Length: 321
Image 1: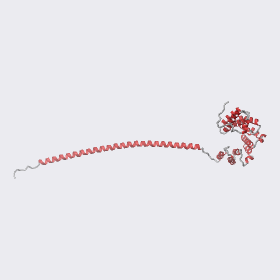
Image 2: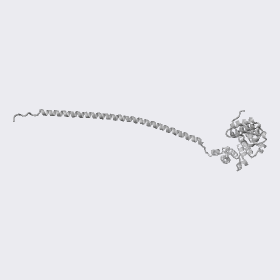
Image 3: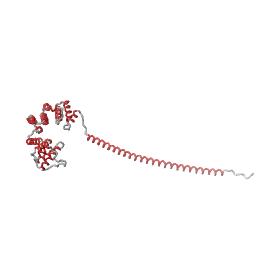
Image 4: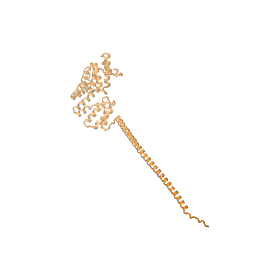
C-alpha cells in the first residue's frame, strides 16, 4: 500500500477525542497511522481538497470499518465533487453509527448528482426532525438549493424564511443562511432587499466563510485592485522609465560625441584656415619687404646717377685772371 508523507509535526493526537475512542478498536501502531492520515485530511480539505482526498483514501484502506474514517472519506470526496463516492461513504458511516447527522450532506450529494427531487424528498422525511438546530438549518439550505435547481426561485425564497433567518443572534450557520437568502432574492431581481441581506451576512460572517463582502461591493460598484498587480505595474513603469532614461542618456551621449567630433572638425578647419591666413600674411610681409628693399636699392642707384651727372656738367675755369 502506497503511503503519503506525514509532516513531523503531525502526531495523531490532534484528532477529536470521539474519533480517538473509535480508533481504540485498532492495534496501536495502526491506530496511530490512521489518526495521522485523518489529521492531514482535516488540515488540507479547505486549501488542498485533492491532497486531502489522497490521505482519506490511505486511511480508508487502513481502517474501512471505522465510521469516522468513512465519514472523513465522504467529506474529502464531497470537497472534490465526487458526489457518488461521497454519498456511498456517508451512507456507510450512517449505517455504522445509526445517527442522522449526515442526512443533509447525503441530500446535497443527491443534488450534486442531478437529482434535486430526491433531495426535496429527503427534506420532508422524519429524519429531519431528529436533527439538531444546526442540522435543520443545513437541511433548509439544501432544500432551497434544490428548489433553485428546479427553477422554483420564489419557492426557494419561501423555504429560507424561518425563525433562524429572522433571529438577531449570530450562530455558526447565520452567515450562510443570510447569504443564501440574499442570493435567492438577487436571482429574482429584488436587488435592494438582496443588498440588505448581503450586508447582514457580512455582519455575521466572522470567519470569512462566505464571499458576502465581495458580493456587496460588487452591487455597490466597488472594484478591488490587487496590490501585487499594482506593484508589478509600478515596477514595469519604473523599468520602462529607466530603460527610456538609459536610451535617452545613450542618445545624448551619442549626440554629444557627434557634436564633439563636429566641433573638433570645425576647430581643425579653423586652425587650418588660421594657419593658411598666417602663411599668406607672412608671404605678404616677405613680398612687401622685398618691394621695400628693391625700392631702396633703386633710390640709391638714382642718387648715384644724379651725383655722377652733376660732376660732368661743372664749367671749366678759365686760367686768365
